[in-house]
Image (cartoon, rainbow, N blue to C red; front, side):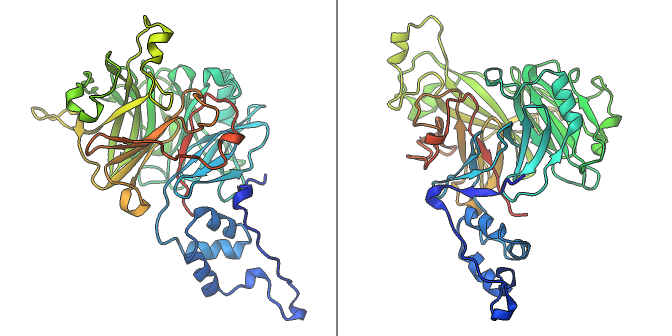
Length: 435
């Protein structure tokens, strides 16, 4: 399966072909001196160019590992047709996705593919390589009647993949999938040909799930309504030994108060024409500096008794109304002042970090290393298409320091809207790293 990253027509780079015949006194490209290749790599500011260079041959790929980029990169935005948007350089690229597959972002370089015949796999769409099949997980998804093509029901809400850590067995990775109804299926991810353990966590949670993530050897699930956080011990990744029913003594962290905020607390919102309050539309879990954070995204509160005419009076200049993001709140897990029970505590600073949030994939990153703004939340959200030429929808940068939102995220996303059909799925952050 050829799934190496491809440039768009406007950003294509062609490498000249050198004769490989030694008798003609010429060297093949793989024999380029490492120091010369390193000098070229240091001059490549774009991750896309480094991806193309690494794809030439094995020797160039190995050299790219020896000569890492001088700085980390901002994440990209991914769309389900294989379009990748480099936000920093406002450049669109494409990856080859099989025609019979639906693609979900699952973290650093990792994508989760679900084929029309039910097959599932994990694959690195940036640097290629062999896909890792997940037949046991695919069987559970089929048993749950999950059809990835039926977008109106959003059958797969989110996919998360653990990284190897001291809390898990060596070379152990886990994959968790939220399917419709808030159920979670978790599977090991072993090399092709090895049997995976799978577990449907239908009875572990008695609430609608807002988000899940792997953190310090556990899987955390956040309740959508009351924001209680449930922690499941993953037993070093040996999930085949976990009980099928919710075990006793599972840790639960109570939710945080979510009273509506007053406009006077947010001076930049005082001119918001919507007079009927705001509500929390989405909650995200993110790990930052070794801590687990919960992020709330607030929007205008809908009022069902409004006529269509009355609702249009409160649309912003760019056409967004009720589902418009107005502010964010960030909480971390701490201890209460009067007892030792853990609880959500509101924070005012990200301590040099920047947050990148989207429903399918969110992450924190050092702002200075990535060229991002400190104490800012980069968000991307799209429930449905407001405008055919606006693929990013409700996106922007929220400052925790003064509460302001900078929009749009990109004035004119390059070569994205023309390739996208009408979708309900959200654009999602992906976090490419060189490996």
